[in-house]
Every structure is written in C-alpha cells, then in structure tokens.
Image (cartoon, rainbow, N blue to C red; front, side, top):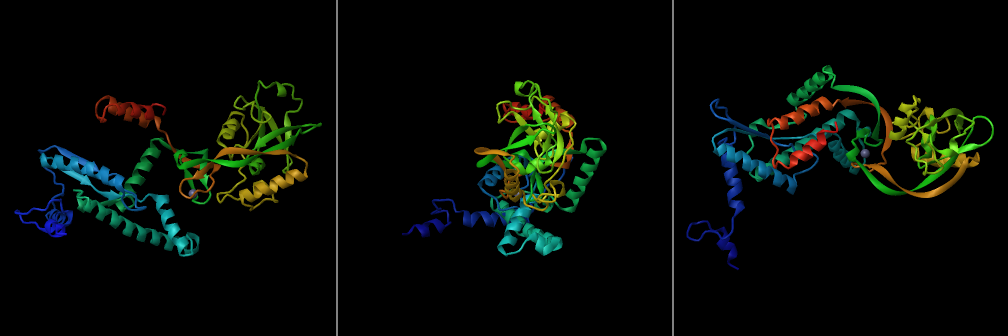
Length: 410
Ligand SMILES: [Zn+2]
C-alpha cells in the first residue's frame, strides 16, 4: 500500500488527502504558547470578554464531554480575540474534596493500607501528589485540544489565593446572617465521614424485612404494633405517632407506651403525617434518624436521641448491650432480643428503596447533625432579578423557565 507515503507528504504538489494532526497540532500549539498568543492584556479602550473555565475535577482525566464543552469555550474565546477584544480564558482545576480523597483511598487500599494507617500528614502528601499527576495530565489534555487558555494564570481551587477568597466569602456571608448553623437530618455516609446532598444518594430497590414490634402500654394491658425496616433505630424512639382521625385510636385510654428493651416511657402523639393504611397505623418516631420523624418531633416538641455514631456503630445512648455494635449487627441482635421478650409480632419480606452513598456505595444513615446552612432566599431573589432586568442573558431564552423554576421555590 502506498497510502502511507501519500499521507505523510506535505509538499503542495501532492497534499495529504486527510488532515494530519500529528504534524500540525503539537507543532503549532508550541509556537502559540512560546509567543504567548493567549495571554490576556488590558486595553482600556476596548471591550473585554472573559470565560472562567468550569474547572475539571482532579479525580481523573478529561473525557469526551470535556472535549465538547472546552471546544465550545475555545470557539467563543477565539472569536472575541479575533474581534480585538481584551480576551481572557482563565484555566484551572478543581480539588473536588471528598471525591479526590476517595480516589486516593482506593489507591491506598490496593497497596494494602488506609488513610488511618498512614496518618493525616502522609495522607495529605499523597493527595497532593495525586493532584500534581492528575492536574498535569488534565492541562496537557486541554493543550492537545488546542484550548487557547492564558496558562500564566492557571489556578487550582485549593491554592492560597482561592482558599483566602473562600474564607473571605464565608465570613462575609456569616456576618450578613446568610450562613448559619443548625440541627438537621442529613444523609450521612459512615464510611466517607461526610454529609451527602440528596442528589448524591442513590436509592436502590432492596429486598428487606418489615419488622412488626409490640410497644406495650405504660399501664394496663395491651400494646401498639409499629412496623419498621430499621429496628435498630427503635433505641432512639421518643414517641409513637398515630393519625388524629384514625378511629382505631380514638379512644386510647393510654397516652404512652413503654419502649421495649430500653424500658422507657414514651408518649403517643397525634399527627396527620401518619399513613393510616401503612402497617397498623402506628408509627415509631425517631427524630434523630429519620427526616420525617424529625419534623414530627419538631411539631410535638419531642426530644431527639441519637443512638448511632458517625462510624455507623451504636453509641452509649443505645444501651450497654449494644454499645459499639455495627448498626446491621445490632439489627440482628435487637430482633433476637425482641423475639425472646415475646414482643416481635411478625416479620414480612419487604421491598423498599434504600439510600446508598454514590461514591462508595455504603448504606446512608439519616443522622441528626449540626450543619452549616445558607439562607438562599435573598440570594435567589438577586439571581432572579439579574435575569429579569437583562443584566444576565440566558441562551437559548427558553431555558429561562428552567432557571426560574429552580430559583422560585427558595
Ligand atoms: Zn461513602
């Protein structure tokens, strides 16, 4: 085949039939870089145009989606540059916190060690080393794509300047009362030791069990039966709720029950959140380990008792017998103990959605925790008016609807 010879010839007489990136791209990119063709300068008389790159995460390398969005940015930037504007495409990479930590932890696991074993100092060194490798590769990929970024201004989201900016913004928002601390139920990953956003929790249909448990009335005979898929959380129950219009409970002589195992008295509260059709219509209320129970707890001024620690193990509030047990081991033990006490009414197979950590697939624990919150309303109002008064334009215009839909509920 002669084709090889043909395609590598570059004289005008027999110009290659196909575009030869190998002999063109890297050669000319080097020239552009050496001559600082992408360096932004400021001429006060000219209009300015700037794009801050959405910084790629240093968790890995660029994929075809990055190739697309960076090409689009490059087209816009080159277009404005050729129009003679002050043009800056500011490049950088994102530390991606926990996601990067996970990548490094997987590498450590392959080496048969862990972040706890090597200690904080060495772990941080490993993370920085990874960031050097991965960040470097990302920048090279961008260069191979021909991205016309101003490389002298490359930033990393954890570099000193940006870290200082983060602290400054945080302090300002705090001073303005826009950031505050409060108790709330979060999605906790006991392995990553981090809170997850709702979007970061993957709900998977799981074959579980529904345990029906008897809670004896505090005096006299009889009991209420509550149903739960997580019996270990009963140790943190601070009430049982029933629907106010549920006739079965209209004439309850007793207003409290005894929480089995811990043998403490907890009240029966009436709340219309309870689904009458579910189970027996009585709902155990664990304000510290369930978001809906947390709301019921608030409405009825119930205490919250946290019985699971940040590692997913039972703490001393759970009682001495279970202290230190993993939550799933505790589940087994509780079921055994309830059986022995004659308080397990029955167990049914039950398919339900169980939340998993999107990073490490550990079962997420709903967990009462002090967290930082941002008061979004005043910020959303400004963002809405910026588009309404034309300060920001959204292309295509039809996406304005989606933009407002996201901001109005705030
Ligand atoms: Zn996780």
